[in-house]
Length: 103
Image (cartoon, rainbow, N blue to C red; front, top):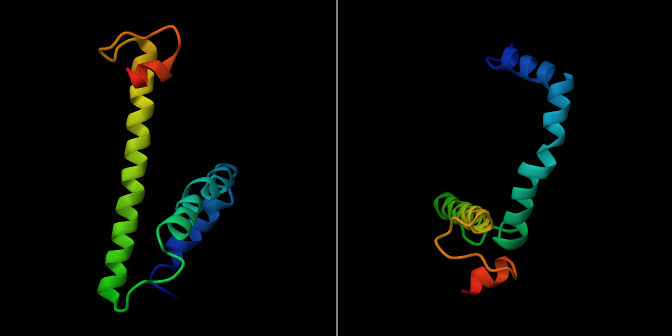
């Protein structure tokens, strides 16, 4: 028996429960989408460099870019929420958040 065989069996049994199926179904919305974004927009279709160190650096930079995009989007949503609540430090106009962003 392999060292991790027992852990693999437990994980597989958990995956087959009702909760596990629900969580596993969300995988394509989260993990797979991230890989697709890396492939389409960050050069992960092919390695641009030769050598393990350089390819690892390419992956690290792509992951950093993805995380920066997520943080920027999160900051925008948070700011829009504060504008909507009138807590941004600027008055909210009646014409909506677009004027608040421009103002």
